[in-house]
Length: 84
Image (cartoon, rainbow, N blue to C red; front, top):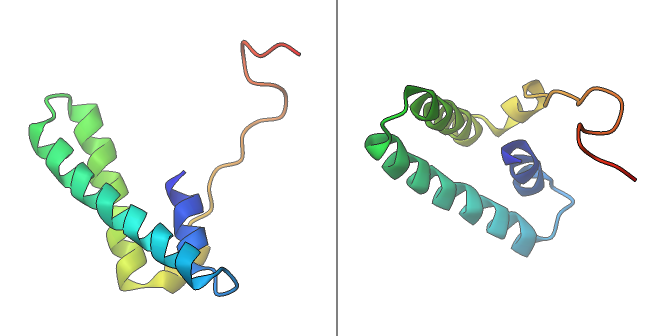
């Protein structure tokens, strides 16, 4: 999800209001992650928070690096437990 917000905020074809909202969402998320990581007792959760904050920092420092971040594609087929 984070990568989609990055893409939305960095898309030069997106409306300025949309880009601003995406940027604000990333800033709010970074603040939340900083608070959460400091209080979190689970090491795995702290790691996820730290990794997300690292990605946010990289996006701020070099928005062009977004092209290097390719989300993993889900495997083919319906998700487990999904029936149609």
